[in-house]
Structures are given as structure tokens and as C-alpha cells.
Length: 329
Image (cartoon, rainbow, N blue to C red; front, side, top):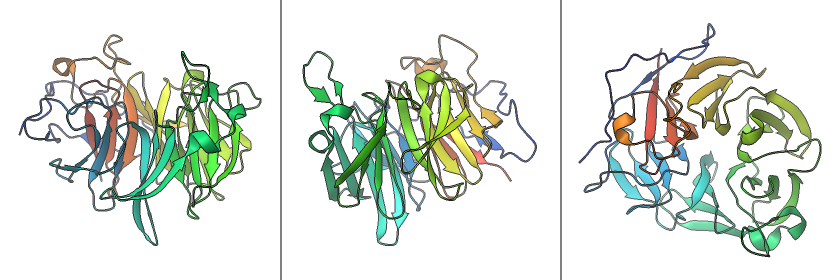
């Protein structure tokens, strides 16, 4: 099977801004083995998540194996998830007392899904019908109101939080059975005034838990309570933040201008990885594989951790690319 090509003879500066005590990571070369007969994964304008077994799930929005591709812990392609939509811009894997599940938001379908890891659909929410029109944006070229759902997460009691990051920047809340509860946030409404609230996660570092969101075009990371109160700006000096994942005491922020930054609980950058200093290669979904460099990002679009603390980063790329960084002792 073919491997994703990488330029490996580079000098890396992976720990710029590293603060004593922050985690350390090492990039892994050629770790991902593509499905047989494929030269590229396909368009990775999606997300990445890791199951408790260590399998890596990647949403691919175009290509011969579009949908959710599954790789084992050694990077070998296993299968695609049956019934998974081909436009999961954002999804997570969460484990609870009754099992481990995929929760994803369909970007074009305006639907929210709960699937088993093998693809059995347990819940499908028609958000377009349930969310009131007052919280929607007008679809481009169309007169009707619509949603453009970009990400979601779920809390322990099953309540679902879904963000309309390419629409009107509202967070829509549903109960565990799919019933609509409420919406909050938005582009025009103070104090939120979001400008592409691209992805969100439940920030488990705080008690009570809260939402951490990447407000991409405002170049900031924000906190919201689960009830919708704007708790404040975490950091407003980001490089177009596009993805977020929590691991231990840190929030990993994938920045689409070519960097991953680790924030502590106070919002301070304690570690940066993979900064791309070449402007034409960063924030570009068409950067060709022959310009890729080991451990250097082009446009991070999804971030996730495995249970060992290894970091996985998927790129906004028409070719498809997923980095792996091993957590160091």
C-alpha cells in the first residue's frame, strides 16, 4: 500500500514558546497507510477522532472513500464507517456507560447523528426542521433560511451542543432524544458577536464543565457556560483558530494559518507545534504533497488525542493529510 509522501530532511522548531512543564511531542513520519489503490486520502475538510481502542477516525468529504475512514493504531486502513454522512465537517467520539459512539454534524444535510463505531444509526436529528428560523441564515443563492453545522460535542447526560459555524454562529442545544431545547450566541448579538465559531468542545478542565469555542475570524478562543452565558475570551491572539481538543490541563488549538497551540487553563500559550513560515503553503488547501514537511502544518482543521496523549491533526487539504505527534515522557 502507498504511503503519504513527506519531506523528512528538515530542521524542525516544534517547541517555540514552550513553557517548562508543558507536554513534549515528536512527529511521526509516514505513519498513515492509504487504502489499497489510492494515491491520496481524499478531501480532508473534516475532522479526526480516536476511539478508546486507539483506532483513528477521519472524515473525508470527497474521494473514492469519502465518509469516515478508520485506521488502526499503526496507521493501517481498516474500513469506512457504514451510514456515516460524507459531510461530517466536525465530529467526536465519546464513551459513556452504555457504549462508545460517534456524534457528528452534517454540514450540508443540516442533520445531527449518533452512530455506533460500526455505523449503526441510533439517533438522527433534523435540525433544519427543529431550529427556529430566527436563528438561521439565508442560504447562498436561495431565499430560504438554512443551517451550516460545523461541529458538536456532548455532555455526560447526553445533551448535545451543535454549532452553526458556517451559518449564523449560534450554538443549538438538543436533549439526548433529539428534542430541541434552545439556541444562543450569534453573529450580531452582544456579548457574543461571533465571526465563524468554527468548532467547539466541552472543556472538562473546569467544574462545572463549559464550552470552549474557536471564533476563527475574530482570531480568538472563547468560553461559554453550558446554559449559554458568555464567560469571556480565553485568548485573542490566535492564527485563525479552527479546531479544539482537551487533553489533561491543556486545550490544543488547531490554527488554520499553519500552527497548533497549547493553551493552559488561564489561556496562556505554553507550547506551539509545526508553525509553517512559508505564507503560500499555509492556509492553503491545495498545497501539494511534494511541499509537505514532516511536522509542519499547512492548514490544521481537526485535532484529537488518543489515550496515551498522542496528538492527531487533520489538515484542510484536497489531498487529505493527518499528522501524528507522539507524546514524549
